[in-house]
Image (cartoon, rainbow, N blue to C red; front, side, top):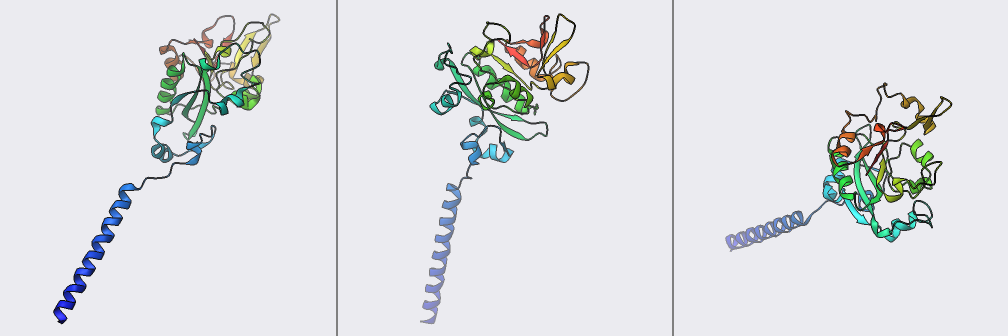
Amino acid sequence: MTFKKTMTAMMTLIAAVTMTCCVSNTDNAEYSPTPNPTLTTWKAGEKVSDKDVETFGIEKCFVSENISDSVFNVMKGKTYKDNCTVPRSDLRYLKVLHRNIEGETVLGELVCNKAVAADFIDIFRTLYDARYPIERMVLIDNYNAQDDPSMEANNSSCFNFRFIAGTTTLSNHSMGMAIDINPLYNPYVKQRTNGTLYVSPESGRPYADRNRQFDYKIDHNDLCYKLFKQHGFTWGGDWTSLKDYQHFEK
């Protein structure tokens, strides 16, 4: 009788352990890490860890999307002005990752023409993998579509329906076919007829001297320059009447 009771107790214990193990294994199989909400809501300008990116999935961090109502509401009256002649359907909202100068991963965003969206996705993925530094990449609408404050913040941007400064000619930015990269350190430079030098942004004047060595500098040896050229873009640094070192366009 005692032996039977002992065996019954042992069998009950084994069954309980087996049940616990099965539940634990099932739970582990179904477990998945929770993505960082900064990534799921795509808060451009925010930093995330490499582990966050791995959990979220890097393939979801380099995407081209139609312009959603929420994005369009940010653009209306700013980059997408009342007189804008570019159909909304011709534009794309891009999500990309980029590295800052410290090597940290930052969420980036831009609006461009659908004709160059695939180029940008490929270029920025390669730059990210190479740990190429881009300080900031948020919609220029955050600066009320004004170039100067955006450039002062070293913000890289693309679409902005506007005229070339001092002219009635639409900029290629108006079509979403031009992009400015790290503009503070790669300024627009033009020699005036009176011999003085016009630099935009003004705080980028120290970087108008391209013989100097400094971070974020774009030149012919630069990976950013090489990638945009490979994708068929021209570089403002190669222009003769003026130099726009931040600027690439198709």
